[in-house]
Amino acid sequence: DGGITQSPKYLFRKEGQNVTLSCEQNLNHDAMYWYRQDPGQGLRLIYYSQIVNDFQKGDIAEGYSVSREKKESFPLTVTSAQKNPTAFYLCASSDRGRGGTDTQYFGPGTRLTVL
Amino acid sequence: KQEVTQIPAALSVPEGENLVLNCSFTDSAIYNLQWFRQDPGKGLTSLLLIQSSQREQTSGRLNASLDKSSGRSTLYIAASQPGDSATYLCAVNSGGYQKVTFGTGTKLQVIP
Image (tube, rainbow over all chains, first blue to last red; front, top):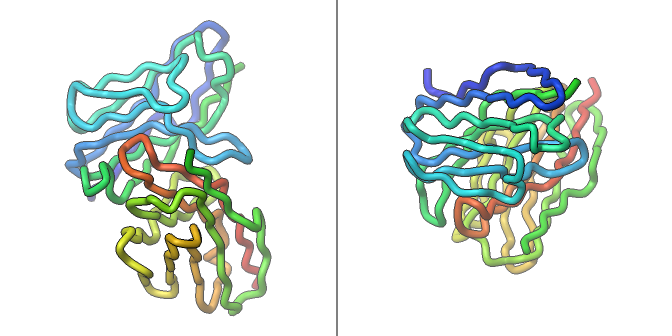
């Protein structure tokens, strides 16, 4: 059963803590993405990766870091430098189609709350 | 910079009605446009993808159209059902992994 999994579903962070959000896909997709969703705003791109061992900053990368050591996995770390991390985080993947991306498939999301 | 607008932000219709959701974008140089559905607290589910060379795509009761010259796409839902209640988002790909711009969505409520 192919798809994207994210864990945990809910995450609570104390001030000054780093936390890592997991994203795993078994769709054999080359490209993976991390988005942030805030109420009343469209999804905003944090980081994306076209291929293993490569990743690029998106529009709002400050305070976040990623790694792409395996094709299936693209974890996101929210560092203490991110001043307003409370949001809904969505991971996605796609094939490398024409124009750089094809249909995007999304995971169920992780809701991060700062205490 | 590409901007994507979805109006209205919320829509309420009685069950059985046909309805149209709108998506407008400012730059007509696009590769494709994708419509998604999002249920509360959930991820996005892809509904339809329209390539720039296509005028429309259909899946079941859903039909999406694309008019690049006017910067518009519509999602037509036939014979709406309460299970269609969700937020519908459009995403415009202007070329490249980092150039997908999402609208803020239209929240649809179908009343039994």
